[in-house]
Image 1 (cartoon, rainbow, N blue to C red):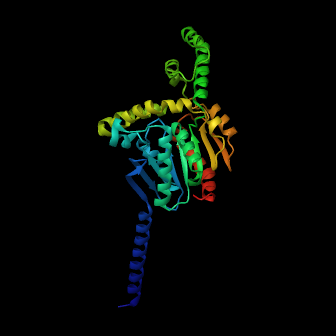
Image 2: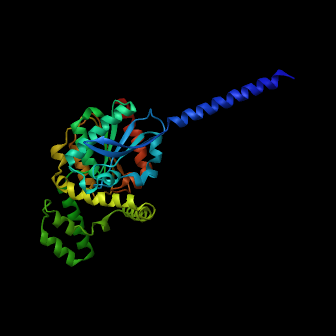
Image 3: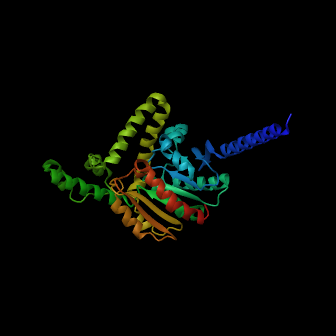
Length: 344
């Protein structure tokens, strides 16, 4: 028998096992871990997903308050090629709320921010990083800014979206938009109601929630479509996993009530203009929930080693969900190289 077929066979077998071993190694590099970790004396839910552990770590600090992001897992899947994405159900939210319910203690901006700092340190240790990237959405932007202020050395970059400036700016901007709309449409009853208020008292939460009851009618189409998606998703979750749905819904109500005073007191242009890490705002151009005009004004006051503002056209408060491809493009092209250079 000729040696050639044996050689070919040997080469084929060797090549097969080399390819198989490489594929196995590549598969093993994928990260998909879900656990409860101790933060601030409570076991809190986190999920870590990514395709390559060498990638920078991106911690998502969800908004709401209490709006845990694990139901949007599919949107984050493309992000996992360039980042190791960490979801965290904050104290009083989602799975973490499910563990402690309404006995959850100390649901405040200060404590949640300290939990976030502990989590950042945990991620650096567990994933072998010097620093991570933190992404805050809406309420989460307040938490993430506070985290960076507390321990700037843990963060290679801050990214805000649905960026909060101040509660006062939100109240006044939304009031002006509603009054302008009522005048334009000749809605005299609403005009009379709003003009009777004069200039709203931003510390009066009851007044705000009363006059802003129709604010969703002014949301851009992308945000309104996302709201419909969330409602459909909630109905599906309620059917498929009623316990998780209840924890998500109850956690939002619970957290919202507890942190409202912290939200009302927020004024980042007065308290957070010195940021000691790279600072990015990637904002929907048409956001009126956390008004883009106020977010830009806050951005302009910030002093940071590096800062950049990206406005996404035809997107609003949920730009990171409704324009996730453009959002991810900005994360990869603008944030990632800077964060890597700064230790991520």
